[in-house]
Image 1: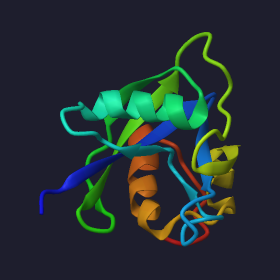
Image 2: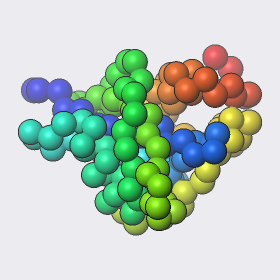
Image 3: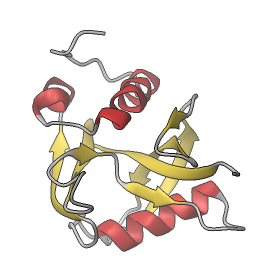
Length: 140
């Protein structure tokens, strides 16, 4: 089975990171994640990230740097994370698809929400890549 890439966005604005609370599927509902989604066949990961942010959040964004690493999800999927930023004039993010809430988190508040277990190592790496110092109550 060929590995499929799921892109996640470390979307930062004003020193805050955007977290999205899942509304579906049922086994993930109520947990928080980096927004994003599956890369379609023939689609570049950066293009998928921009598309997913538009579909899920209604924003105009651009992909930045890829965060080093990849994190296994359920087979055959693997999470790859990119930094991202909103483009000037973009609407504010809204939970349009697969999410029921969004929250901009400062570094001190990153661990105030229950993240999906599979996103935690990717999130830690993204925060380190962004130079966002956090008070991680979970320990390293």
